[in-house]
Length: 347
Image (cartoon, rainbow, N blue to C red; front, side, top):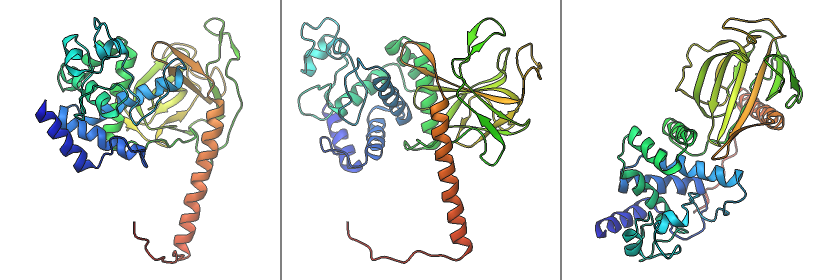
């Protein structure tokens, strides 16, 4: 234990992680904390980041969860923290917690295993995963033992893959799924009645565009699924960092450089608008060409459809602003505009 404390103290000094101070740059400080815990426990930081973000998403989606207070959002239930047979569910004594088989650990050497201490919580969860091993398969087993839900395991490991590929946490950018200079039109169609294949509701927004119009990724995401669906035709499904599954249906074909298991960025070409679907593989032309965009959220127990229309409108505005910003930068570069140098301010 002494060795662990010494190592953690070195990590705190090297990475400049304040244990109690209010974070000025939460994402930067979280990343440093994840990397520090990787150095101590051997669990790759993208998995720790993915678990933390998954739990942060659950707090957002489930109002019965306690409000997030610190840098780390992982919520370990009292009976898990103190031990299932511990008569004191609020136990903070490391020795008695270990005696009763609890997860709680003291990471910062203050003599308490505190479930509201960011370092204690992250270290405790990392130690739990490390008991199963440190490979991807080992970590998946640990996640299954903890969450007991295959969707949770997939989401966390796919999110970890995004963090691993991008090498950072600041991945909030979104993009409208159709290039803005193409002709397209859409309105709110979520919840409309559909009859083919049985009476059902329309779980998405239809964006009408010409055949062959590029379909773009709306987010940083992991390609979970590609192929044929009798309703959606040629479709692709992408998981983002917020427990959302982005569904692109009725495509005319895929980007040949994209495959299942890849990580994509906002604006990456995924495929092309078509009219495939409503039958066996290859069926097309039963309706005008359009992109069916669906959005599904997982709340820890259930996956359900949400109306994507408000987000599409927001992403359209965001994309337009980004394009205008890029055009202004190009214009300044062409005209030889340079910023006026300012005197550096000591920090």
